Length: 375
Ligand SMILES: *Cc1c(COP(=O)(O)O)cnc(C)c1O
Image (tube, rainbow, N blue to C red; front, side, top):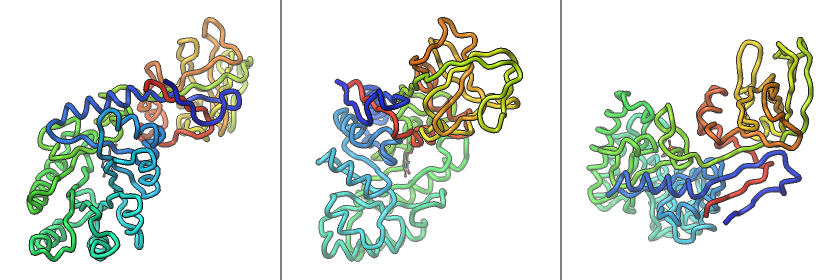
């Protein structure tokens, strides 16, 4: 079955195909890998740019029951798609937002003593019976209670004076993508000690990289994100199947004479008489401008008629030029160039732009037609 979202094909320049079977299979692979721990799904930022409702439904059908988002608005969108899911909000409690957690039936991840105090107040009144997680910082120095604060909270919980019982204690790894980094072991040890102060409460540490690592990192609940979407979690090559395919229409094919330049800034000069195909997408569609090509620095490439074609010149807002001189059969207006897919992964495009697959995925635009296949 196919679900088509976004504008009609004839009104758009590019097409994004999202393979929901691959997404489901990636989750199932990770879930089996971490058994008997539970495997959640991180679907923040619109499921890494792929669409939180269709992605959430596919993950639910695959067996996922616990989901993590960053903001309440994302929890609201996911709740509309998945009435029975467990939904955690990583960004925690905005002041005054406790009643919204009751309304949406989402769980805040509380990361400071102020948030804990505000939640305890709510838990005595409007949010009685609602659930919340506690985030403990073990070395990332971003969100979460310090180890000393976590101990203080554990003492209050044991004494019955905390005001609520957390349903999950969690922490987040800073360097899980580099398994040799000593910070991984240090965070693991710190989290083990901190979580032990909350006996009987499920614990969670692993992002995708640590989920793939498995072993001691699993605890009770794993929280993979990027690996679900086919991105590389531990550097190098992805260990899960690609989920997205991005294709753009060729809107014009033209000749360029040797010595002419292409695009804004005239950053690339044609070294030979060239055939140039112009594609109807650009950095406004998530083809990051940093992946542009110049005389001194080659950029990304695309596939046309199965052949690798290098970009020429700068990526514009809505247009990209590629060198199709050597492609056979010759490229024609209306052909589709593959920017992601057929062996070009999000991490390859990311490398050309000096970034990571996460940023490529979450930059994917909203102008193109989106086709959800494989459900
Ligand atoms: C984003 C996020 C994850 C998922 O990370 P990936 O590297 O995409 O697997 C897990 N936990 C927290 C707290 C996060 O912010």
